[in-house]
Structure formats: C-alpha cells, structure tokens
Amino acid sequence: MLRISKNAVSAVSIILCAATSILTASETISDALVWPELLTEAGLKIVWENQLPLKKGETQDRLYIAGDYFYSFTDTNYIISLNKNDGSFIFGQAYAPKGFPIIGFELYGDELFSIIGNQLVEIRAASGIEVSQTRLSFGVSCPAVRNQTNFYVAGVDRRVHVLTSDKKVEMFKGAADDDSIITSLVAAEDKVIFGTETGKIVAMKYDEPALLWQFKARDGIAGSLVLDDPILVAASRDTNVYMLDAETGELIWKFQTQAILDKSPTVTDNAVYQYVWGKGLTAIDRATGRLMWRVPGGLGLAAESDGKAYVITEGRKLAVMDNELNKELYSVNFADVTLFISNNEDSHIYIGDDTGRVACLKPIEK
Image (cartoon, rainbow, N blue to C red; front, side):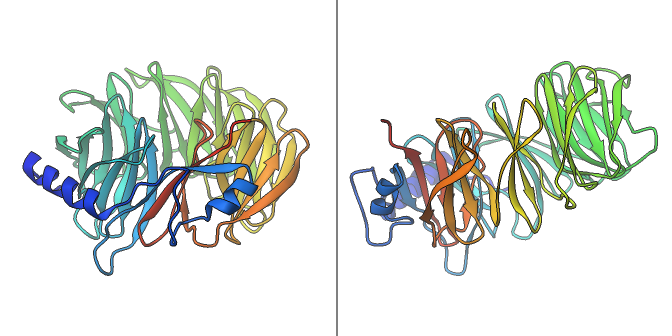
C-alpha cells in the first residue's frame, strides 16, 4: 500500500481543488451528471456535484459511503475520499497496487479495513493513513468483519479464523459441520454469523468456537448476509430470501423470487430489496414477507425517503416507487449514470459515472 506524506497530501489537495468544481443546488454546469431541471420536476435537488481528476485511460470503478465519508475507487485501485455531506476533498492515494483484488471495504469505529492480496490492511477513515498491515497465512473466501474484540476472516481452508483486533493474534477457528466453503460473514459484539456454499447459516459465540444456532437453506448463500438486530436477512441460490431471528436462528419468513439469486439484499426499516436476475428489483415487506412491488430492469435501491423508494434501472433511469401504494410514481432520465450506492441510512442518493463525475442528490423538503 502506497504511503504519502502530509505535504504530498496537501499538494494533491491544492491541485484537486483547483481542478474540481463543487456545485450547490443553485449552480449548474453544461456537463452536469443529471440536469437540475429534470431533478426539480422529480422533486429532487443537487446537494453537491464534483468532477474527480482521473488520469488518461483511468475510469471510476466503484463507490462507497462509510460514516461521514464518500469514497471513489478507480480501476487502478486509486482511492479518493470526499466529505459525503458537501463533496469536499479529503484525500487521494493508491489503496492497492494496480490489478490487486480488494476484498471488502468495511468501517469499524474510525478505521476502514480490507483484504489486499494476503494482507489485512487498516487505514484511518478520515485521512487514509495506514494503521496496520497483517500478513495472512491463508487465502480468503469473502470479506472480513470485526467487532470490538476480534477480526473474523474466512479462509479458503473452510475455517473462520478469529484474530484479536489489536495484535492480530489468532485465537481459534470455527467451521460449519459439513466443512463447506464460507461465503459471507457478519459480526455483532456478542456473536459472529457466517453463511456457506451449501446453504448453512451458522451463529457462534464471539470469543470461543461454541455453536449458538444454525439454519439450513436448500442451496448456497448468495452475496452478504445482512444483520440488522434483531433480524438477519439472507439471499440463497435456492431462489428464496430468508428472514431469521438473529438470536435464535428461527425462520420468521421466506420469500420465493422464482429465480436463482446472486446478490445481497438491501434492508431498511420497512422493506427488503432484492435484485433478481432477469426480473429486476423486488421489494418485500419487512414485517410480513409479502411482495410490495417489482421494477423490471431495476438494479438496486438508491435511497428511501418519506415512503418512496428510489430505484436505479438498467435503462439508465431513476424510478420513484410509492411503498404504500406499491406503484411507480414517475421516473427520471439518468442516461449518464453508471455507478450508484445502495444507501439504506438516509434519503441521500449518491451517483457517478466512468469519467469521475460524482453527485449527491436528495428529495426537496416540502
């Protein structure tokens, strides 16, 4: 991982600020990612918009939000951090060598962590300064997670390796009783839960390899488990979305999507949103497990606000769905948008394109 000095960061900041325009809702430019006039008609406004300076031939590849920060990764593994509230520049640096896979990008407290190559890497969320690198003696099968006490890392050896959060000393290992490959991990302060390629969902104590409960879906767990205590939501390749009691593992409901699932669900206070290949985005009532609506071609939830769900579609549109009437209200042309964040925390919509344009939108308050 590349380290840069504070002076270098300051120099980058000056260059970036000179080359970048941060737009408020009252400003427009000819190359805006989404035209403000279209947004106004849809009851949305621009909070900020920014053009990130990419090198020739470099493309913006993926976006994240974590805490108060917005992160953009390029296809060369360069990372740029902005303040998610106003779009102002925080830092930019190489996060990993070009071509290296980055597995996970998770926030705990004020630190971000990922698996890069065979290293568990931690950086300061606010500055990008490296906190630690820990070499792992095994390959990993999914993103790592942590709580205050431990890191939990799933190895290709079909074991969850439990490392202390401070010194990264391995304390113990855990595994499914059928010795299946682990595809997803989530952690709370009192437990860790993992899903496997055979459909096992296993909860064990955070500080010892003691089973708390287990559940079996008919096929492998797809994407990441979602823990929103007191519930756990999982998508399975058996075509079902499952909601479980996170304390007991008891089934609360399951929803049949009629297609093999390969993506994680997005969970909010009122709904579970599941991308279904070939069918689009399905919204499931969180309380009952019943169908609310489907958006053919829908790719994912951008945000929720005041009973409305904002959905990005394959056709480069933003569909606005009414979660009470269970129907589409209108759609907005998002022809230039190629990237978005599934934000289940608030009403802000974060979007971008391959060239480094990024923007934050939000519904106009009535």
